[in-house]
Length: 182
Image 1 (spheres, one colour):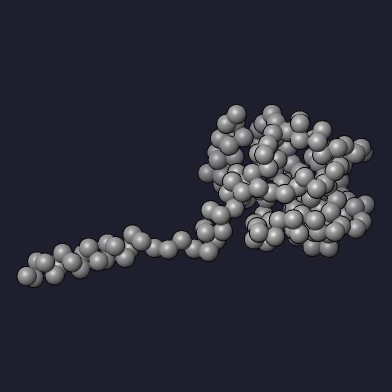
Image 2 (tube, helix red, strand yellow):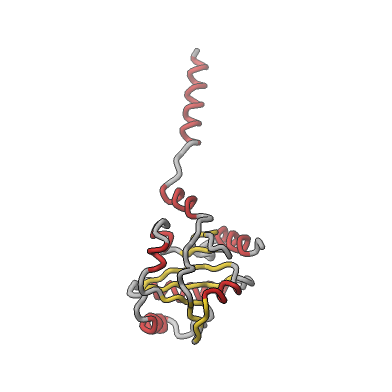
């Protein structure tokens, strides 16, 4: 009898410890992975000193790291610089680029504040100016903390990864594995 009680207690403790509920963050990440990021409403984007069509841009790039920034948000200027610097340190992947979607009315003001931090940024990445919050409005099913992180999307605009690829070795490996899977 005593052995049965001990066995039941051990099974109960094992069941409790192995059946923990995922956190809210984990649930939100699971829900957003492979979901669609709506960015097709943007018809054009900026690249260096020119404007190109969204369609032309997507034909050239299968994978995008989408980074949403808000003008007036003081951590956003260093984040813009950091993305440029960190991606320069990583290996180039054919078919992948960065797309910054910047919520601002004054793009020149945003760039001026960025240039105060670092004059040497090679502005080889792409930018969409979003003064009307179209990205947030069109993707209101995605939690704002994920929107304010970065998202790696594929050619179908499906979210494949959330977060910066350089934060740790696991993220870097996941990034390279994902963008090299074609």
